[in-house]
Amino acid sequence: MLFAHDTECGLVAAAGLVNTAGLDREEGLPDVAALDEFVAVHGWTGRHEHTDAELRQVHALRPRLRRIWYADTHEVVAIVNGLLRESHALPQLIQHDDEPYHLHAVPRDAPLATRMAVEAAMALADLVRMDELSRLRICDHPDCDNVLVDLSKNRCRRFCDAGCGNRAAVSAYRARKAASHS
Ligand SMILES: [Zn+2]
Ligand SMILES: [Zn+2]
Image 1: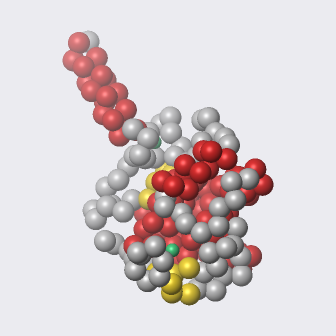
Image 2: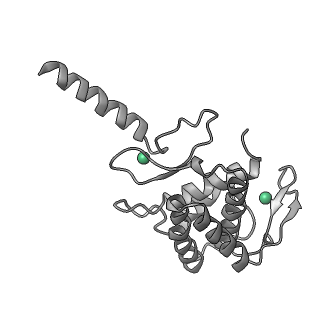
């Protein structure tokens, strides 16, 4: 493990959330049911209202988080500090649901979007401190703008989880084949 467990989970969840809103893609969180599923997949516990208002707050967070993938260190710091300040973050070690001690910086009954923002900000604060922002990348596939977090040991990850690695391999294969026939 490169980072603390909660840091890695926070980064993966933040990337997953950003990728529910692509530039040319279908809305990944079209309704409350889709948000319920996202929350379950990423193991979010605590307050969850299942309302349109909550969904809108989560939607509003996405462009702010996406910005982080394109920003330089100073801008990342400004965004992270802004998110922590706005949410009145106060880091506390807690234990719940069989998880070992980890950091929460807002209470578990804070709104879902606030907790998502703060968890992402705390994880990103770790990346900044470890000088590892280069692990935040955009998918290498030309038709994809998904963000990714490279948690591999040798920093070799190039594609997002949406099958772009396979797509790229297939196109490369076809290109080779076409070249050999010409
Ligand atoms: Zn927790
Ligand atoms: Zn991709």
